[in-house]
Length: 256
Length: 260
Image 1 (cartoon, each protein chain N blue to C red):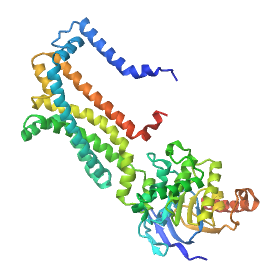
Image 2 (image 1 turned 135 degrees about the vertical axis):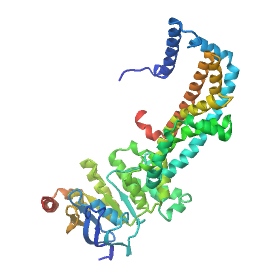
Image 3 (image 1 turned 60 degrees about the horizontal axis):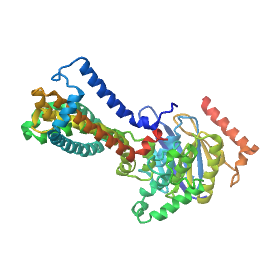
Image 4 (image 1 turned 180 degrees about the vertical axis):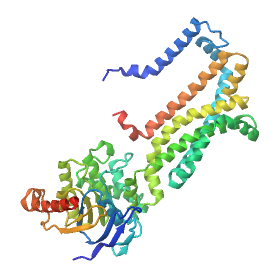
């Protein structure tokens, strides 16, 4: 074992961020890239401060639409995953459909959603939902469908009903899969929202970046990018912590 | 002699068109009897377990348990396998309690009588030497301890029929002998009916009243052997001549089966 200082280990991600910013700043300066092509880190920071108000407002819009879309995705993903995973027939029947659906670029849905719901928050919420429910369905369904037959037999000789097996064994067993999928889903939900906002909204970070880009204010565009990834990282970390807390038994190897 | 508790009448089972997994099984087990099935691997011993507990229906013939033809999962049996199959998100105690959450009539009383049930589970865990491990998770226990807990889980609801599918197969020799004695003591105390499937002839001879030897696939019962050793049996008997002779005879019969 190398003796890693725990403090250094804890700080490692921050060190990486700082290093990236320094490389960014130095590269832009050394090659003297014009700021309307690629703004420096300093300029981006300046834009962040200057436009803090509008950025906060649009971030909030993006944040709550993403969360609603994500919430819908979790609800639908859980229910659909449970239904599909609990029956071999439905699993076989629906899986190809789901894969096919997932292969459609979600940006292609946005115009349809605009026709149905107009521009604004609704298409953003629905795009976030459409893009993020798939990993949840697949993970929950797989968790349920891969139940060990011996475990099922143990319960069945006791006279357990299908529902008993699913609730006592299937569901708890698929929880690690579920929480793992939440981490993926929340980041995808941000992608969905921002994609929809760039095309069909007059609010949100996606819209902000789009309009700033059309005015060549690249500092603001990059500030938008930073805010999105910051939000996604925070949410990811939140769900990672939740996962650790809820399903510690599944990750026992790592902290023992 | 007590009336037959489990009877097999001309039972055959084919999983698919590739032929019978087991064939023409006729036998009867009386209540409280300890029977063991031995045979070469792939001889359908596990299939036999599934028929007995109603997890599978026979293709021909009939299985009767306690006077009634088996049509679905039995509900009066407990089961333990080679893998302990404990649920990793439940403590040892909660794993042992699991059957009481499912079997009638306990499932409807579970909340009300929980304290009492926990008492049963603790007592049972104590008899197999797991006192003090109740709140540990299965993955914190050794293989032998997991298997003890698994046997407790199979017995907590006081089943009349205990099915054991090579329960000690994955354990080291010393732990295995220790658990033979645990099982022997539990059985001596409660006298439930046991069907034990095993590869280990010493295990079968030490524990069982009756040993059935099965042929290769399609599995048939080719020999029924009553073990006359007096009870309660001490582990030392297994190192004495009568026992060793008995095991050797059984071994010779298995040898014949394998060579045919």
